[in-house]
Length: 198
Image 1 (cartoon, rainbow, N blue to C red):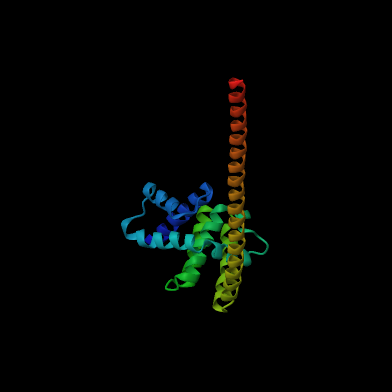
Image 2 (image 1 turned 90 degrees about the horizontal axis):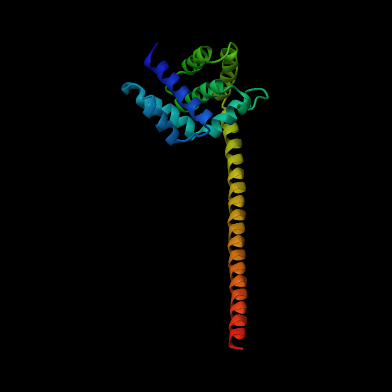
């Protein structure tokens, strides 16, 4: 087994770790590396795969879903989806690697770590992605994804703005309540002082 195969397997394990722990981030990847350090000669390729998938995860997931016949990425096995994330990243962004190599490596890793059906499942989706890539259909899907992400960003900004306004309102209510309490205390103090004088 070659170094690249071992590195891909380690990258799948790193993404699996992040997927199961619910934290896809560079920090999670770095934590994995401190526990399971890849061989020195493989570090660059490992980081390229893991950080590449993390940087394009939304796009990669949408592409996998687009070619998976009504399967949401969340319903796929954790092993299968992370194997495919790496392979799709390679197909789209590491053009120096022949597509057949990326696909065959993913199939073999799926057979090793996945279920009995993993190899065929992974093969079907990756073949479709590769054909679409060759026919330049992927660029249209990526444009749709980018438009959706812009829409999602607008929604997120709107939510953030609403939360900021709500926080300002809560702060204003606290100030008003404090002033009312302070005013009430002042009236009570005046009354007490008034009674003490009398």
